[in-house]
Image 1 (tube, rainbow, N blue to C red):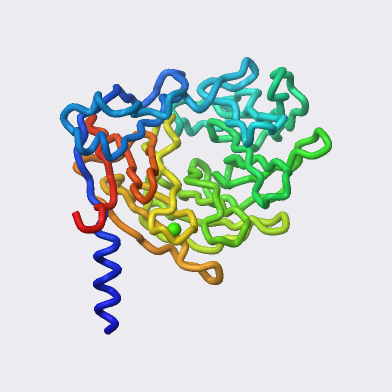
Image 2: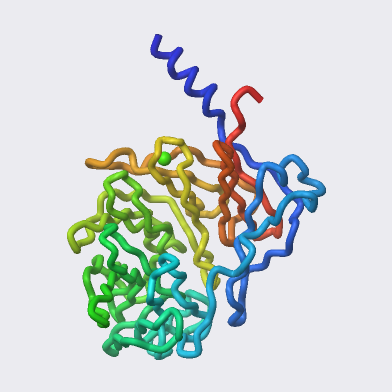
Length: 334
Ligand SMILES: [Ca+2]
């Protein structure tokens, strides 16, 4: 009886697959100070018309999701708006070369975090780091981590001798202040990259998914935000979401890939030659479970796109060899 249930589940959720798709628009890894390219997003139409996808709807998110600000450090961007009525945005400013690592394509990092008025662009408050710290990152992430309506600013903070950590700042009463921070990696020039900020366990609070040391054998960690603190709830070895020296940080995507009502995460394996779809197994004592693993002919090096149309989810990955693949779940009974 039990294997019949398993068989029925397998029939309902066929394995994930990858299809080569003729590139409908040019996508390049940005360099030399360019603002990020729009994310390439393919649909089933592009898969079914793989050799001539131009008849399908727009294949990109339509616009670059970020925009610059005169006070922002080079190759950095303003935080995307948290919501349409969010009054503030955030930038890294006071560019500095005091932390010589250059993991993001240049050796210039942020020396301060600035809250700006979203409508006028005027600075409201600036938090200046001490000399031993920099923001080794490209844009702050403004997120309401607990749904109480207050903006949190999620950043990557690197210290001269202990390397990178995730730091969360609050913006309240017109002032930025440090709210919580993960432990630093423990060595200079060791970095991490945020893969997603989402309620990954259905608890109502967001967790920050981050890949620690993505270039030298990365570990995916989930840090749950609760009552003003960050607690590591799960980790798994064998992931990467960044190519060394690239300014592109968005090698990950969030969707509910197994249709259980809770968001999951897609990101490359440690060698970036496969896309891993992962989830937290439960709310209490969770583990990192693999939903699917899809091999690719070349390492992923571009922003990962995702579209959903009903039950049909399509992930788009751009590879170092210039090719583009659509990764999707086969439809039942096809
Ligand atoms: Ca899910």
